[in-house]
Length: 150
Image 1 (cartoon, helix red, strand yellow):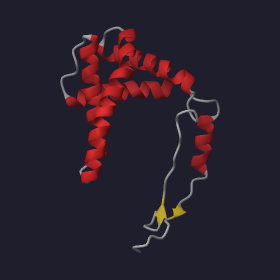
Image 2: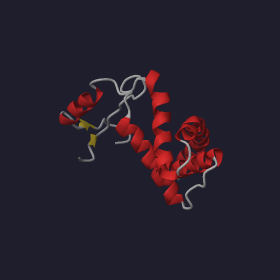
Image 3: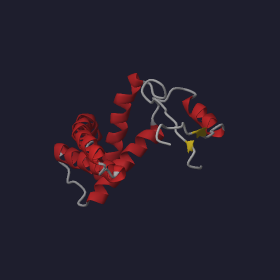
Image 4: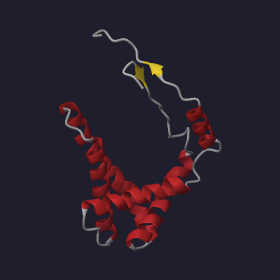
């Protein structure tokens, strides 16, 4: 891909790829099951608290993201890892299970929990996966639009 090409793909997940009526309860159940398997504790307890705590961490992290973006000091991967690690820490505190000791271990738990959701969800609309696969086969670059500054 040369400098004169712009590549992007926007997929609207909510209500397009995923059935929102199923997603919330299903994602909570799958997160609870995964974390219970990884750290012990009751899967229902993990499921009960995960979304509320994720939203708390996300909202705080989003403020940090906006500020860092404005200052051009954002490492997106590190920011995302911090959100994951903080979410696991708060979940463990809420459920009463000892949190993984290191930052990296907490990130790993979060990533494995979310992977469980993405691999096992039934909230995906029928045909969404095949449609995305078909898009991949027809992917093409779009010439970058000219700018005023050259």
